[in-house]
Image (cartoon, rainbow, N blue to C red):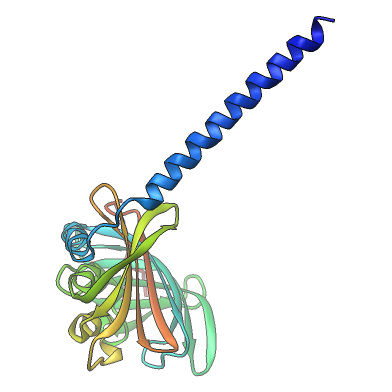
Length: 236
């Protein structure tokens, strides 16, 4: 006869503890989501300052729509400024109407090397003549310059991007900043842009997207800021 009361008490305690934890969890989440959003211009400047000081990054770049001037469907690689400007990774490119997947690339000594198949490296000449992905890390031409040149910026909300809690900011990026990361676009006016910036810490840039036209976009997701990167110039 005593077993049932004990079970009832135990069940009641379990239910109360569970309810308390659920309420506490909801309160914490609601509070975080209801907290005032940071001021857009301030957060952009903080992130720009942090990005300018970085020496390396892992970058994922994707495009949507047809951007004839930039025949890159996607790119995944590592960029570094030390001991010299360099980059390496793989990309899916569009060439003569065909999509070539997993093309290896290396930027070293300002030259672009590509390999459609392993060990088939070719020298394609100055990277700047095609697309210098390494330039995205340079303080005066790259990602830092893009987020430093937002206008009409406003915070849109909070989102989790690649496991990082970030603040989403929309605005317009100056034509000069756009043309420095992608000269092929030849922008003549402000380009709509969106940035996702880490809310805490040193406000690292998590992701940025520009929309050259209403039906095209270039999105760059960054991670592993400051992680050492070694790029080996391929034998040609």
